[in-house]
Each structure stands twice: as structure tokens, then as C-alpha cells.
Image (cartoon, rainbow, N blue to C red; front, side, top):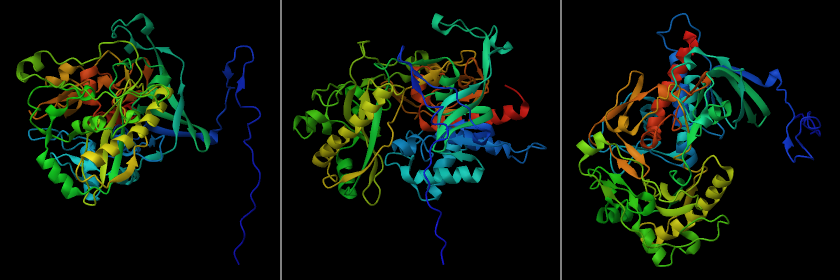
Length: 547
């Protein structure tokens, strides 16, 4: 006879009466009381990686593998913990639905095939969760299946996973004079005055399903994409004004596509990178990209707007109330060509194309962009078509408006595809990204001011502290350079180490880069390079007792 379970009992939070916030009646401030985290809620680890995207996965895997290497004698294995705010790892691949870590592999491209980024692709291929990109030898990862691929990699490496956990504060030692902070850093602006003192980060505080927890760590790797840990620790950072930031994206998928009919349409109407000609996809190229086949859609949405298929609420500018929008069906060709790559691009790297106005307008929407692989069953998993400009990813109001508006415009884009693209007539919605696709956010100021430059990226730059190489691939700030020349540049460790904070290293798009270098390093495969280097550096510094 089955024993009945114990009856449910009424419970309350033990500290609800003493540790809840209060409103100051005079100032109107909300005051949080001091909190004590029980030792039972304090975890300890050697290397803590915060953020589970391509950079974070690479950092955690590389740190654990170095720590477990047979060549390491008489040293205990290091404990490595990987924290992620979502319920799965994968970052932009799984949250946003971007299925290509590196879509740039046209003939002539040269890259390292031994890195962890490539290993993730190969593992997904072996498991049957990847396919070939239609236009070159790049790999398409299935976003939902990649969650399981990441789980397997984390488990097999022995990394401690912690999901549904968001960093809300850091644990710091008091500042102390540090020899490395004297005489090595250049003068900064008045609002970034450096007092020559460094603070040491000892851990982070998390909000979890269990409540507040803390993790103490000897080294921390920030791979959040927005430099959240560095920001909370007080590390200096920069941020592009949102009137000039690269746009954010809502990615969606459709099913029920007639694949053979669609592929025949593509063969008869092949787009090239010269067709990247709307205002949001304006592209300065070297000229060699213009004739290369591209998965671009632009004119079909212009036609849909003129035909009334996309109504006034589905095309135009986002206003604060998200309902008042306008149509602008007239778009001029803005593709610029620079045929003399060997001289001008090498001697004078391009500068980002920025709007004329420096004011902060309402966010704008462009429905145009690219498609990716179509599965044999007729599923288009990566329709990167809803782009929003003038959004600051670190502003809660901006991202809320963009998330909701992006989903609104997904339906407008679907209406246009059904009406204008053969094979999509009966297609229906399959998925919408769980998180905006972000290209631009905070960037740290590195210790010693080792900012990676566009010149370095476009001139096969080398460095004394190289952690890897990456192709000459630039995609952002209205500049497109495909790495078909076989040129590569070395990626330096020094751009990943922040000022003023010890025991912290960063990897991913928020490292110290100028705009053109950002357009290269934001690529997911480049993020994996920085992640792998950061993980090795963190593990090595713990063993060596070095900062």
C-alpha cells in the first residue's frame, strides 16, 4: 500500500519581516537593508565563468581542460563553474536563434581549425544537429538542439553548471596600491580619473530560484556580452551613443516552406552583397564582395509596403507608444564600393558610417535582411529580418520596447514572405527569438590601454600576447569585408584585462575594441577565440599565483 505524501504546510520567507525594502518617506528613496547570505548559500570555485554563450562555453571548457591536462604534474584539478541567467547554454545561438557561429567561409578564407568554436560545430555535426549553409562551407547549428550539445560538452568536461542564476552584485576587497597601476596607463578624461588603486573581485552575488546566493572565486571570467560583472566591479567602460549603435534584431523561424519551389526561386533571383542597399544595411565594401552570392532580402519588403501587404503598423519608425508608425517605401541604393583594397584599406582602415544627427531619435525599424538554411522538412529556422536601431541594450525601457516591437513586426515580415516569396505561401510561424540579438553594448577600457584597432584587423596585425587568430572578417557599422583573401590577424590577451579590477578577465564582444575591431570581434567564432584564451589565462594564473 502506497504511503501518502506528507500534507502541504503553509510557509513564509523567514526574513520577510526584517529584510524587505522600505520607502524613505522624506526622500522617496527605496532603501534595501543589509543582507547576510548564509554559509549554506555560499559556493566556492577556482574559476567562475559568468555567461554561457560561445565565449563562456569556450572559457569554461578550456579552463577545465587545462586543469585536467595529463601534462600538469602534482597539481590538483581546478574547480570551474559556469553561470547562466537562462535555462540553457548557447547564448546568441540558442536565445536569439542565430545558427551560424561563422558564416564567412567563402573560398579563400583561412582560419584555425583547432579551436573550441570549431569543436562545437563539429560536435553538433556528429550528433546530427547541424547542416551546411547554402552559400559556402559554413555550418548551421540547430538552435534548439544546440542546447543539448552544450549540455553534453559541459558535463563531459566536468564543469559545474548553474542555470537560472543572474549576477546582481559583486564581492570586492578594499582598494590597494598596485605597482602595475603606476606609470603604465595613459592619461584619461576627467570623468575617468585613475587614482592608481586596484580593487580585487572575490566573487559575485546571484539571484536564483533558491533566493540569493554567493559564489567566491579565485578568478572570474566575464562573458556576459554587456560587461555586467566588470560594470558592477567599477571597471571603466565606454558605450557608443545609441543614435550610432548597431541595431538589435528579432529573429524568427517558419515551417511549411516548399523547399524545392523556394530553391528554384533563389536560383532565378540570386542576390549578391551589392544588394545590401537599404538604409540599415548600407555596406562599404572592398569591391571583391559585390559579386558574391548572398542570402539577402530587401526589395520584396519594399514592394510589400507599396502594395499595402505590410500596413502602417508593420513598417517604419518605432515610437514610444509602439503603435504610431510610418511607412517610407523609398530607399536609395547606399552600397559603396572601394575597389583598391590593397592600398586604401591597408593604409587607411575604414571609419564607421554614422548618422548626421547626434540627437536621440525614436527607435527605427527596418524589415529586411537575410535567411539561412531550409531543412528538408521545410523549416526556415533563422530569418534575420526585423532590425531596430537606436536601442541601448543596457537600458531596460529600450530593450522592453524593442522586444515587444520586434515581435509585432515579425507578423508583418511573415505576411510579406507569404505574398512575395515562392515557397512561403503556406508557411506558418515556427519560433521567435527568446532574446534580442545584440551587436553593440559596453566596452571595457583595458589595463595599459591595449585597444584593438581596425588597422590591426585589416592589416594582418600581430602582437606579443596572441591567444589565437581570426580571419579578416568585418561585419558592422555599415562595413562589410569578407575574408576571401586568406588574411588573418592575431587576437591579443591584453585587450581582455580591465583597468582597476584584479582577478577579472573578459571575453566576448565587450573587450577593448574600436568600432571597426568591434565589427570583427563581435562575431560568435571570434568570441569563442577570446573565451578560450581567457579560460586558459584564468586557470594558469590560479596555478601560478599570478594576477
